[in-house]
Length: 124
Image 1 (tube, rainbow, N blue to C red):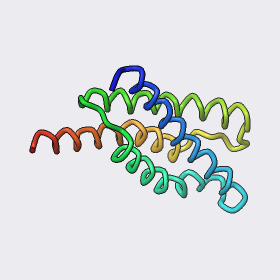
Image 2 (cartoon, rainbow, N blue to C red):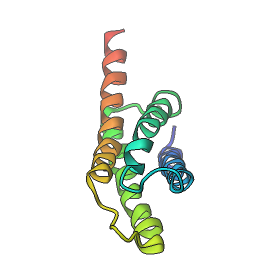
Image 3 (spheres, rainbow, N blue to C red):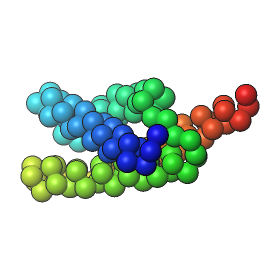
Image 4 (cartoon, rainbow, N blue to C red):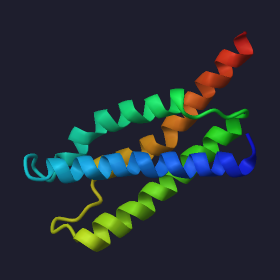
């Protein structure tokens, strides 16, 4: 896969995963207390992200998974800031432990899956 396709794949899936969380947040807003929405979305987000990483993401080098995690995390931070913090201006603020944990997982999950995939390849 050439670098342009890898980059587009990275950005596409980063946006899709962010959008799923955003839409889930909007759907849950009327029925879940605002301080709990992130914790309710988190298990679904982790499961979907793991599925994407296992089924839709292929990289030849472990370093690429580090880059993937970095790009997805920067995208999540920027998109959250633009479309939640600036656009919606939450009354009680946005940056709480669930959000920081989400950013941490957004960075770590690609690295962990990349490590697992590379380990699996070298064992064959």
